[in-house]
Length: 329
Ligand code: SF4
Image (cartoon, rainbow, N blue to C red):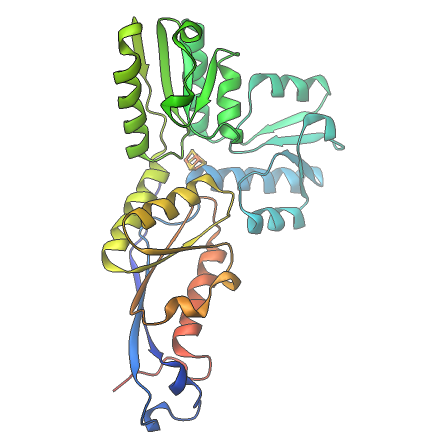
């Protein structure tokens, strides 16, 4: 069970560019004005339990075996991958690339045929599949075994989606919209629909409603399985809440991370000026121009350190390195 973190709001004082140039005494400037900049960290932010658990497993296994390999990146975040590489975790893209004796399956999971390929090579498998992804895999396997065609709502190129479809044993397809649904002859009369864990609740509900309207007449049974992850739902809801208070939202996370991109979309749709940054170095000072408050959120694959660095950088930009945290009159 994840704990909800206490809300954290920081207030720093920002001076316009003209006043910051005088590092000695900002109060002596006649034309400088000061503004309070509020920085609010989302209640739901950063690593989810699945990612934290997977990273701990990999670190332990690497220490125990003197280095391991992971099949695909454990999470889509370059900061995390670089940190793990320093601890002896090397990323490979297929079982055939393995050079060591131990290979870990990432939190995204894989299909059963991939596990078989690893085992056929005599490799020891460390399974760091997130339990929620495993639930989706089980749902796909159960549906396929009961004769259902399986639709996974999500990104066909994402490793989690490929892995889940692997458990449907060739009786399924990933679809991002109903236009890409197979025709009724291929689907048959039994259809099961589940979702990539990181999709938004609203878009999955829309997709399910569209399928019901378009395909129900040709079906004997339609099963809808909720495989959305609460961790991503909660982060999206908290991020949207932030947009009600702040016109600028900084989302910290990997550019290829699906759940981070969902956060960016949710904040942008809610009307906030939204920027995705992988590290503090990506923050552009001009984003803060005429801004009084900023909300900070992060995807489930974003490490605490990256979030702390972004907040420190915002503080630095808002106060000016030489002024420190002086208050305005
Ligand atoms: S976002 Fe959810 S499904 Fe994905 S790794 Fe985290 S807990 Fe698991």
